[in-house]
Every structure is written in C-alpha cells, then in structure tokens.
Image (spheres, rainbow, N blue to C red):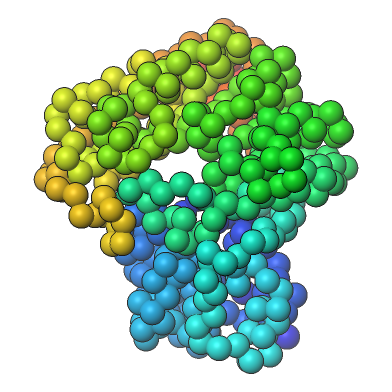
Length: 414
C-alpha cells in the first residue's frame, strides 16, 4: 500500500469541501500523490498556488503532484508547463471517482480538463465535518450564471447548477443522525439555488424544507447575494430560531458607479435596505461582507463611499480584497488604480472592519450566548463570534456561555 495522499487546499469554503471529497476518493483509489487544489479569485491566489507547488516538489521529490481547482481549470496549460506538475485535473473531473481510479492505476492522461460550461450535474459528496465534530458542510449548488467584470470564477466553476432538495434533506438528516449540531449550506452562488430545478424553487424554500423535515439544531448559510434573497428566506430570518443570525453578503463595493462597472445587480441603497430589513426582522443579526479595494477607475470619493458602507450596513466581519486584474475579464482592460493607493485603501477598509468587529465583541460582554464548541475550549456564538473558555466543554456540544470579557479578538467565558 502506498503513502496517504497529501492535500494542499487554497481558497474558499467550497474548495475546502471538495478537497476533503478528493482526499477520500484518492485514498480509496490508492493514489499516492500530492494534491494541490488551487484558487483563481485573484492573481495573488494563483501566484500563491504556484509557489506552493514548487515548495511541495522540494518537500516531496519522489511523489506525483496533481494540480486541480479553479486556477487549473481556467489556465491548465500554465500548470502543465511547470516542471513540478505531473497531472492537471479540471474542476468537474476532480469530483469523479473514475478520475482517481485512473490515477491509481497509472492510466490517467497528464491533462484532464473538460469544458466546464458543458457540465450540468453537481456532485453532492457528503463531507462529515471537515475533521471536526462540531460543524458539517453540505454543497447544494455550484457554478455561477452572472458575469461580474472582475471575476474569473464562472470560467472555473461553470454555469449554476443545483443539488435537488430531496438529496440535500437526506444529507442533512444523515449528519444530524451522526451527531452534528450545525450544518452549513455552501455553494458558489447560493441564492441562485433552484433556478435550474423543476418549478424553480428558491433558497428559502430549501431552508424551510430542511428545517421542517430534519431535526438540525443550527442551520447556517454561507455567502449570499443579498439582492437575490427571496421572501421565504426573509420569513425564516424573522421566525425560525434554528436559522443562524449571521449572513455573509457579496457586496463588493459601496458606490453605485463602481457597482455598475463591476456589473453587480444591486445598488448601495439596495444593500443598506436589505441589512436594515434583515436586522429589523432579527435584531441579533450580524453581517459579514466581501469588499474590493481599488477597483479600476475608483477615485478617493468612490473609496470613501466604500468605507462608509461598513457603518451604513452595520457590517461586522469583513473580507477585504485588494483588486488585482484577472486576464480575460473585462475589468482587466479598465484604467487601473495605482498599486500603492490600492494597498492603502485596503488597509483602511480592514481597519474599519477591525473596529466594527471590536465594537460587536465589546457589546456582548454581560450577555449569555449559546455556543457551538469547536474544540474543548473554543466555540462560536450563533452570530459566529469566537468564544474562549477557561475550562473544557464537550466538542460538538451547544452550551450556554456567560460572556465576561473580550481578550485577544475573542469573547471570554468561564
């Protein structure tokens, strides 16, 4: 028997989900390899993957290196040309057991990359918790039908496709039976779930069905596009305590002209209105958000509007991306902002995010939260704030926690 596969994952939560599925398939097929699951969201993400590949070759000189993920899908030739790389797999191919069986028997071609736009199925692999007993992830959707001018991801993931609701419910029920208290729904463009299914159900319909037909204690939604949130989901936000009061929003910017040039589907007013309504329905709601600093043509006034969105929407957890051009996207042909300005603006956005996060944490002192334990002394509130404990709790349990202080970026409980 060969050595166990080594996995190096880059990028988003969906990539992490798929990486664990790949690891299981590679192990089953007896694939002795180093697997690098790349990200293409920024030029730096691609450069980081290439650096990682070179490092892994130095660390594992005798093992095959298999490169897959979004960067491999969008530019397979660039990775195939690297001396360190033995096999390049596309995003659809990496999720097929037959691909790993061929690798295990030595029958694989050096480059196996299908036309991602022709893929119609979504592999619904079930991953039991990402190596933790507290939280499990279910992929319900893949791909994206939108064409934001900065984004290469549709060309790495293909068009939007959904896992049928019945399959999702069965997976959630199985996870509950295994003892998981919290399940997270994940995908590339979650709010497009259902558009390709009979009757065109919406994400709110899926969540309502999960909550009705399973006994999951906590249902969490990963990143969503606020302009596409349906009425059924808003009702659940208002009425269903098992739906967690934390939404991560794909906002990207706070100025209407930049949003238009990004080809986003919402305005600044739309974003502010959504956050106000969600918080009215659920006063303990917190928001995370993706924001891009230094998009082409961004002026200081545009940046100021981006910065002010943090307060206008009441954002708590920021993911800030300094803009970097992706070849093949329309934004890469737009007039660029000076790199030093991009770096400075990103730093200002991160500082605003850090201040908002600190304010949120400070506001929790003296309150009691229900905390999902991720390790014996660390867990997260329903709003996803980290909590550190002074004594051990059972990993995977949901426990009450009286917050007595904030220390080192986390809430503290006895």
